[in-house]
Length: 96
Image (cartoon, rainbow, N blue to C red; front, side, top):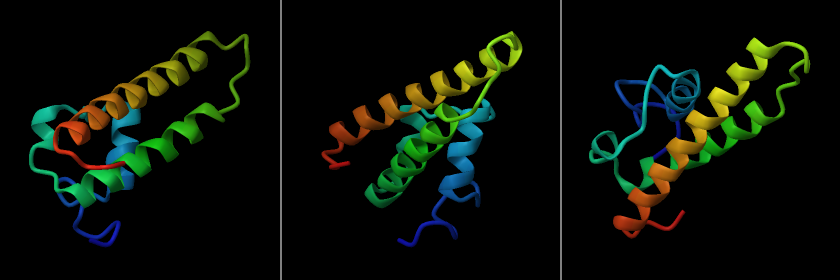
């Protein structure tokens, strides 16, 4: 399946889904992943990793505690989503 298009959740692309996960608008759990096929799981994994890299590279002033906390929360949400995705892929025997 081509990335983008209708291969997302609720008409959203996987890039938008990864962004929503990072912002806290959506969570990735085994119930959400149940209706994903192997291509969708691989695509989401790729976009979550890209979003994680972007979030890591955000420059935040050390004295801005609120911005630092937001960056760390985003990283935590993306990291947790990647772990859930990896475990689901392992159970379904999908190589990532």
